[in-house]
Length: 451
Image 1 (cartoon, helix red, strand yellow):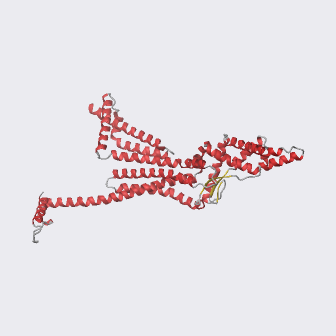
Image 2 (spheres, one colour):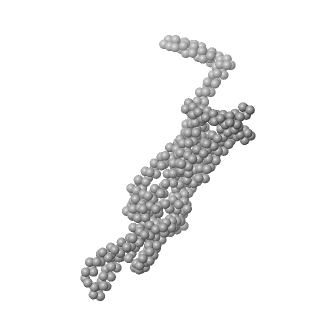
Image 3 (spheres, helix red, strand yellow):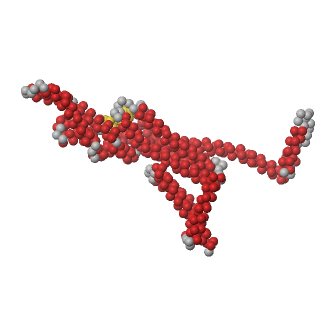
């Protein structure tokens, strides 16, 4: 073009005069351009400015999408924590499977047996009985039997407590203890008072009164009348120890507020990032990838937290293995939620990539369209044109497919714990439905063309 030729001519003239004394040469100005050249120059200037603006928009979009991913991770953890800490039904359902855990049963049995034998002082009772027998003429050799008798009584108590802990009754006792404890925890955190679960300094302790009462009744029923002499006992089981427990009430109020604010903030940041991105498809794909990475990091953090939690257990925790199993039970829904969101985000990112202009994505789409068209031709050739229904599906296929995706997302929202398998199942069902819609619509068109 003449404008470009003029620029090149000026460049050659400048190069030719390099090293010589500067002379006044005529330069090309906008006034020297005709209308077409001026239009081309303005287009090039606009393109250059657009590239600068596009870069700035991508920078802003990436910042917002990263913030959305971080906020989404925080929202996931906060909502989980809020439901576990302040929702008694959710907590009881989460804890109920632990009654089958042998380490938990063993720790509870040891704690209850120790409380009973300590309150009875079996050794003193046996010594008192031996002295009474000897006073009435019993042989001195009975002194040698005091220790074995005390050991036998202790073993008998242990057996009866173990029988309670491993009975069907323990399931209901465990459920009752956890419900009562969690209700007390909610009261504790909201300042309404405490109950079965309470704070003892830095220790969070659980009242095992129902289990103790059941063991006492079983001992009396088995003929061990001394158990009836047991005074009223307060048997507690230390669940965890932390210096932060006294600050729980303030943390609970903040947790309850954050559980509402953070999810809304994450969605708002994601929407803003996608909106300002020069390519909304790529923006959504990047946002989904960032969110997936964040959820995988959350999963890793929970695993690392388990090691830190176990390393920080105090001496008041009788069974570290039971505490580890308790941590696993309490966090399994958080891990499941992180995995679920990560897989869902990866599916969204994959869909965005498949809709893109890349060579691989184009090849995949071409292959899918070829399979669709081939199957549609087979159906049309067999006389399956689906009539007016098929024509309606073809005309409305985009709204129908959009509604299918929306229904799939609603399905996942209403599904309490879909897990990875649930997300994959919903994605597969939606994909198959969309494929059927495409085939039916195309078969209808092929049948009408052949008619």
